[in-house]
Image 1 (cartoon, rainbow, N blue to C red):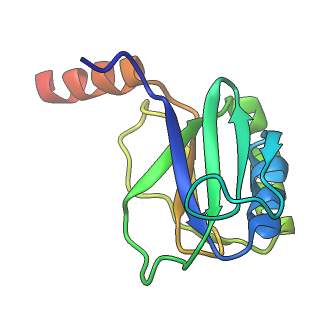
Image 2: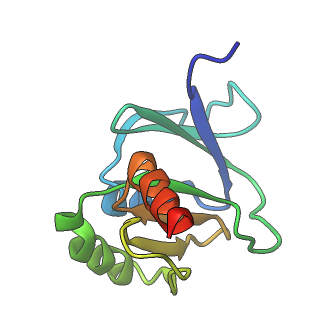
Length: 137
């Protein structure tokens, strides 16, 4: 039985460009770079975002964009600063999906390799409570 999340891996065309996005937008801490060595499938770097291990590996970008995404929690106080950091990197910010009030705000953006990221101010408990209130209506 799984006990939690081990890591998330993104295949990217440019390790340095993705490193900049991770460290600038998510304030990730780089903890490893393979350099020219290849211990796995290709050159790679590891980061920590909070206690989440993010791996990036050099390879071909995704051919198309989808709604498949990874969401990171942010505080409401950090929302505007995150928007500014995303804009400063010229990343493609998407309009948020329609939401019911009380489930938090989200910033959606694509990196240069078509991965979709979400920065979300809400929690699972808040969302479930809001859905329950809407259903009880």
